[in-house]
Amino acid sequence: MPLDVAAVRAQFPSLQSGIAFFDGPGGSQTPSAVAEAVAATLTSAISNRGVVTASEQAAEEVVSSARSALGDLLGVEPGEVVFGRSMTALTMDLARTLAREQRWGPGDEVVVTSLDHDANIRPWVLAAEAAGATVRWAEVDAATGELPLEALTAVLSDRTRLVAVPGAANLIGTRPDVRPLADAAHAAGALVHVDAVHLAAHARVDRAALGADLLSCSPYKFFGPHLGVLAARADLLKELRPDKLLPSSDAVPERFELGTLPYELLAGAAAAVDVIAGWGVGGSRPERLTSAFAAVEEHEDALRERTEDGLRQVEGLTLWSRAAHRTPTLLFTLEGVEPSAVHRHLATRGVNAPASHFYAWELAHRLGLGPAGGVRVGMAPYTSTDDVDRLLAGVAEVAAAR
Image (cartoon, rainbow, N blue to C red; front, side):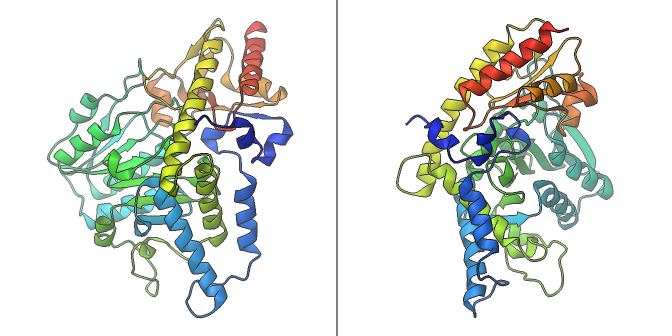
């Protein structure tokens, strides 16, 4: 069933500003239902989690509902969902824990890719360096923006302990074929961590289908509040012993969650999942999510093609998003114009399309763009054809003024 874009847009109060938001890859707009869930939880009769009072039970229900919702979104059981301050914080903690628990040391190897956001690179690099392990790089094909399977297999060995790969590249949108990458890593005896932060906003995610042992995402990229989520194999979580306070729970997944959880944010994250499910059809929430993402992909791909066709008409413009399979995320540069200048001009037209390396530090340098990066255009379910046409008109104005 096609996405009802008008109905989707009506759920986002910020769109009443008239701004065309193409900055979703950095953080999406928020639906009313999510804000209401956050506010309702903050102002409700709620206490720290427990089973005695009604307010304690309310907190337990918020956490349970959030684990169930995020589990449905990511294809895992509720007990395999860990919440944290951010994906970056969770991955930093996870990397340190894995390095210690698996006793990484000299001769061991960790593989990262130059396609990824630094949050799925630096935590592993730092943990490997601290343990004396070797970091090996699976390199992006800079000409195509692809991450070939051969780039990974070339750096795998029987000493590889972990492979970190992106589900989608936040800078240029590349969606590598993750399952063959994961299968190759597993054949070498390594664990696989997938950064699904950018992917989860645009496609149905299933941890097991991707072949990931560990998968991370950020609800604020798919209409929720600012926090991080780790979805991991239950047996693996049970094996790991992270640093924690002595009196805190040793149960899984609680042992990975440091301090009191932000109940209001968990309620908002669950509401965001239900908002997406509401765009689909079917019986169960997973079925509705599958239907919704199919409609979202159809809508966003059409917008991406419309945007690409328009940008290709601009003389001196280079599109860096070239992979065969990708999210509706485009990166471009305009000859003779700093990306930041394009960003500023578009802002005067009420079009938000930021310019940066967007923490894809290695990829920006592999592409030869350096710290300035490029202008990133990200489509979302609430993006309209009018938004796209305003963007294209603004870019054409910058090009004409050179």
